[in-house]
Length: 160
Image 1 (tube, one colour):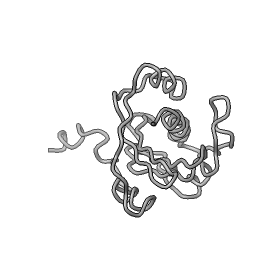
Image 2: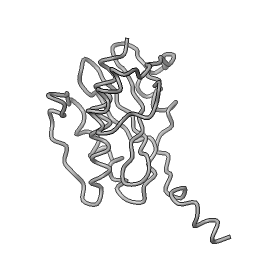
Image 3: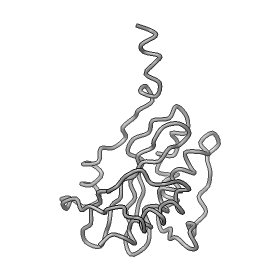
């Protein structure tokens, strides 16, 4: 039995901090229906520039209401995906959240004190225009959050 438990790898580290539905209710009150953005070659190229690798999905859901758009993305931290959500309003990040964290270290990226750094950020020349302070021991998670924030801007620019 111990061998079976050890073979599960990152399953022990999966921590849900907020569900998608709870996040959407927090942002929108009554969430709008999901819309779909197809990741064609143009979107894929722009995402590759933001993420540093090809985007793995052919389509992505997003939610838009009252001038706010919510994007829920996954990006590898060190070994496992971090599920984070970004709300954009008028080409600025309104808020960021970590919904699910799967790594064994670096979970400090979920704290409001870290996430507040993204509020008010824009993208200029492919980079966030605000410095995001790192967290000792969470460098790869911080970098993943930065990449997802930039990807949210890319996606928002292509969403109808």
